[in-house]
Amino acid sequence: MLTAFPGTSGTESLYDDAGKGFGYTHGQFTRTVIAQKRSRNPATLAIAAAKGKFPGALGKRSWIIRFLTVKRPRAPMSAVVT
Image (tube, rainbow, N blue to C red):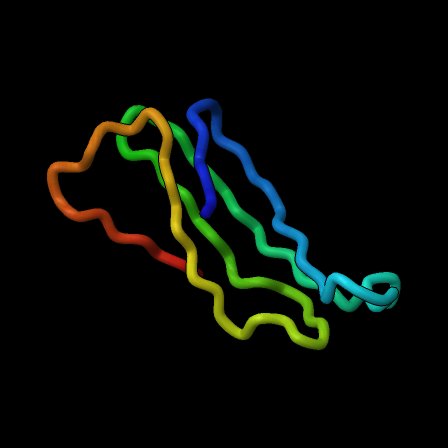
């Protein structure tokens, strides 16, 4: 679960690797850029495709996103993953 906290706009990077061995020292890892833009309405969260590779890396990833201090939407929300 990814939790988006209130505050200013910002960008983060999610790092992932095999979790064992030293492949990361040879560039065997992925990074996923996550950008949040906060304004009066709407707040947006963009999750880019992972860049990089390592043995066992996920081909696709599902996300559960929780926005804190956001009122319940009146209509269903949609998400865009690029």
